[in-house]
Amino acid sequence: MSEAQIVPQPLKIAVCSAGRGGSAIAADLTFMGCLVNLFELPRFETALEPIRHRRGIELTGDTQSHKTGFAELNMVTTDPREAIRGVDLIMMPVPAFGHKAFFDVIVPHLEAGQCILVNTCYWACLRFAPMLKKRGIFDEITLAEAMILPYACNVIGPAQTFIHRTKQQFIALSAFPATKTDRILKLVQTVYPQHQKVPNVLWTNLGNLNTPIHAPLTIPIAGMLFDRYTDGRQGGAKFYGEATTPGARLVAAYDVERMAVGKALSVELQTEEEMMFRLYGYKGRDLADAMRKSEHADMFTEVLFHHGLLEEDLRYFYVSLAQLGEQLGIPMPVTNSILTVMSTMVGMDYREGATTLEDLGLAGLNSDQIVEFVTNGVK
Image 1: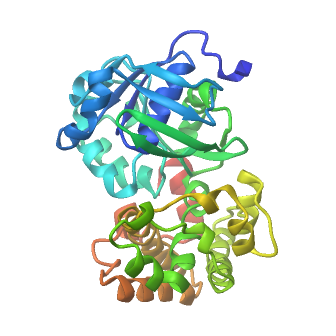
Image 2 (image 1 turned 60 degrees about the horizontal axis):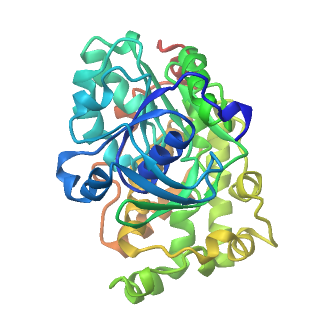
Image 3 (image 1 turned 90 degrees about the vertical axis):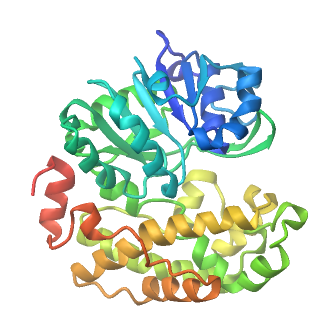
């Protein structure tokens, strides 16, 4: 373990969700010397029971701590008050559609000085800052988000999690407003030094590694993916192993629009192909070739899980991105077309109930006003 990952005094951390990301983070943080409370929503108590019974998690694979084996947790609970009492940091490594359920139950019990890191951004800071403001605690809490989870991982059995790959190179992190970033960054870098400060939450969201790839790579193989593997056969499809050049071209076309929005907001962005190389070292003739030759190519993706990825990307980012581009005078035909085509093929209107600029407090603002708002919290 590197010096940056040796915790001199145990950090007290609450991890929300016992899913793949939460279980990996909780176990690995324990190996790094943290006191970890694992919290799950009561409706998922059955899934939590094996971890509660063993009081920990068996973790294998490419860990941040360079340790594997059984990690005994400080607490395993469905009580939000107990989970976050006295902790320094609350981590929320859950999909975007799960954010609200956790905020609803933890916000009433937050204590002054605590930090919240949503490991899966999707505009989480802007979506939930109003909740903290309504309770009058926004100024006392540091609310931040990271652009992506630190692991590619899976639950492989009861109380067992495997990490395929730890993302060591760069994970963008920002608080809202950005003036609060330094305090939480210091805490997070104690255990995950790959998290790096970026100017504001526009950078975490527009630079999210996940959003450019799932839907565009799905469209050319949708029939195979949704018809052939709906019954969970073979544990799902090798989604990245099936990546196509037409899909890669669609990713590139989407990136043109995403990066144009970024430029208008002074956000420095890379293409998806460049990000995959930076974070994982994947390269090839194009993105599809790089993914087919990557470690991701052998990972099975269950269809139900893939539907969740699409909902997260499209409903919680694409709609707001399209609106943001149009508000700034940037044509967004590819982004809007992906939304329409995926909604038609899947039979679900991803625009319905989606995150909008109104939800984010960005509606009607020009580029300078948006940057001022996310940086300093004022309009």
